[in-house]
Image (cartoon, rainbow, N blue to C red):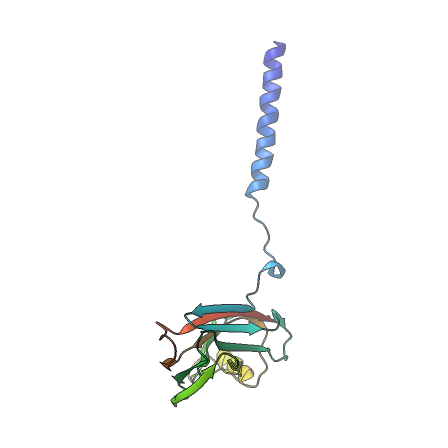
Length: 189
């Protein structure tokens, strides 16, 4: 009888403990935005070329101009190469604001620069310039948002910035198979 009572108590205790443990393990953790890793620097390399995009900070204050740049460097063994490209070998191609679900594509003029010498000691560098083009028949909130970006005053939100290095090698290095592209993210509070 004592053995049976002991077994019942032991079994009850185990069931009670496992029920409490299951409830705790099923509880979902609260995600905090402070713990989200921001990708403020990215680098891609193909052949003799390295493409970097860098944000000086993960979070900017509203009204503060984001300090972001992209850089293309030649790292090959030759003294230099000759390349051709459109407006610039570096383009910030798209800006996404994920809080509101807005996407803005950059519009870039298309002149072609040819025969441009490019050496390892002087990389190409472009800083982020405000862009936020829109189509007049888009929703009014998105148009106002785009106008704020164009005035270099990014509204609060979480942003993903796409950048690309696209050029042709005329001589001195192997042609790239595709443009070098990457993204970073940052917040405006």
